[in-house]
Amino acid sequence: MTAASSMLSLHHVTRRFGGLVAVNDLSMHVQANAIHGLIGPNGAGKSTAFDLISGLTPLSGGSIQFDGADLTRASVEQRVRAGICRTFQTPRLFEKMTALDVVMCGRHLHGRTGILGSMFSVMSKHRDEVNIRRAAIELLDFVGLSDEKDDVVANMPYGKRRLVEIARALATGPKMLLLDEVASGLNPVETAAVSSLIRRLQEQGMTIVLVEHDMRFVMDLCGQITVLNFGTKIASGTPAEVSSNQHVIEAYLGHPRPVGRSRRDQRRAILAPGTDSTDQMEHEQ
Image (cartoon, rainbow, N blue to C red; front, side, top):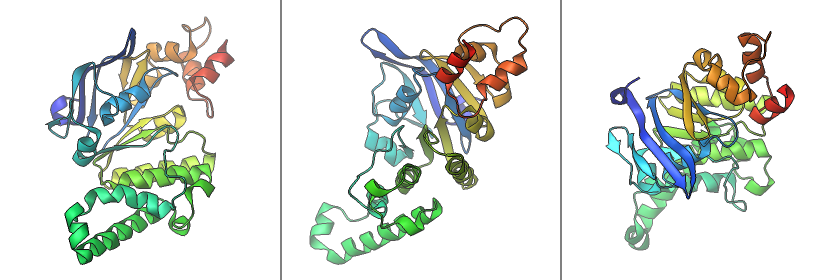
């Protein structure tokens, strides 16, 4: 895959926090309309990479191109307007608001009535609110929460809060969605529902980047995967290529392949359902 054919391109991206290099010289290309996985053991730098892409954290070096534009120095708002939106490891929502109100907050980015317009044109402001409300209701229906639109977020189960956060991100009208551990904490039924939702988004033309510890979830969804370890890219390729890469196996299992253990056995250990890299390492040791 080349930078010319990519929706998102990271070129030698680096982030330092004092003497700690959280992301080290990362180059990565995400094709338009792809589901791209970004994986690695705990502390590999995955969420920091998302912070760099979304603009929450400035780069120490390198550059970021998105949809033909240089976003290296763009603000979070500029990146959202360009078409990048994300979720977080732990849903960050307005707890005392209803699900509908939360999603409407994301949609206000596309309101046509500015501050002066809202002050002097009541009709325009009303039309804006009607359109925003309608779009938010449609998004809640899309993620399967039409019956919960009036529920207060603080009273909703964790899995449904995840869906509210996805709906709010979709309300910004993104071209690319960054999903940070979206399946974390979900039961198998909820995980299957989120997987189906991601596939439907791809069918509608969305580009999606996943950070996730559930390897089976990632391998089933992603066409391409980039693997980080201690902030450095150690592998990239298809799920089959990545899961059989010896550097990836050692990063997840913590040691070279034991004598008498096949590569297939190691791949199965990485793909073991319901475990992350730390669990796997403890089991192996």
